[in-house]
Image (tube, rainbow, N blue to C red; front, side, top):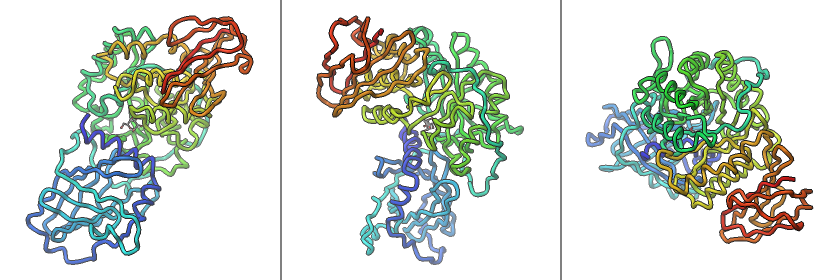
Length: 542
Ligand code: GLA
């Protein structure tokens, strides 16, 4: 994956996640700024126009920064920081000698607070201090902790199909509908299953790859196992034509032909947009074109829309989030095409309470997953108290699967699928399914575990007990059956037991869903050894 793409995802996530906190941290730093001086003496050697990339360790890990600078002859600096929530224009920018100064407004809608960037230009690098008056201010008189310096180097420009910088302050606020409850669209009676391009390909996705993935899913057993929706995430968008209709970028030459191809394989196809002017990857969003985009996507033949908050945070106050999503819910309804509506706003503002009212079939409950055990666990467990909000047609979504992306062990990936199944979570594979290793196939296509996820009763499981780093979960299934998962989050194997009387169960049969064998039913207690970071998952017929 290209570094700038990784950056594009991470920086936006970090800004979204930490919001006021990061900015608070930034302004903890001293902020003197460069005194106003004459701008008439920029060093002629300072040809800093163009692309610059750097990274800094923030409170949430490494954040990459990408700048496009333009330097005028009089020393005025303009351009933008290209972030995945849209670009942040450079304000008050100037270069004097080898000193550089600019500000950016990084906060959510309504914020006017400027964050200062000051630094020095050296031959092939720019050394910036965030929120203070240059390198010398790193140990400021106030003793405030300095944010680590950001060193920028010459970098590659971001992909040209991204939309350009915007001045968010000048954008009109679109008319929003009155708040109301939309009826259920009748879709997603069980949690949607399929594949999404983001975890493996990010914005490096194109028509050819989507076709190859769909063909692989139709042929490798995934379709038979229930994987159905092939979802193109961010990176397909380009610009609008003279009528305002969205155009796909040249990597997707014919959307109608693509959807027809996927349909011909007996699969369905999904796509992605944002209620903001820019998607999280910095591409054109649906802001101001909601009805038109819904019509276009329906006309192209799409069956699923993931709608990602992203730059909408810079347009709308948080209090309007529900009605902003309702607007697209209404637009999809008006197309009369069955389109699964997937909200992505990272679980903000108790989306589980209002998701169904805006016509949503699923809603993300967390920030983006990454391919690590800790991230998977954090996303999964964030849903442990949300069981009452899930049911046929409406699902909590802890994000796409990472199985097969190689950041976790096979045991950890088994735990990943088991936890998602216990949560009745959407199962969207996020790996390159054109090449499934034997191990990935064994995990991702475990039909016994998938059946727990897809059980028609549609009840999300919940934790029944916890002891140290081990937990027991139960999920009621149709036909007087239950799924039981014994999880071990610790890094050493643990013995665990269940007393059936504690769960008010009298098992007639017990099936081990990863061992693919029946267990003996006699006695009131079942003891098992659960591997480190592992799970024992059972289906019990009562
Ligand atoms: C956000 C979403 C991700 C993905 C990217 C695309 O980060 O949470 O799932 O859609 O945007 O830019």
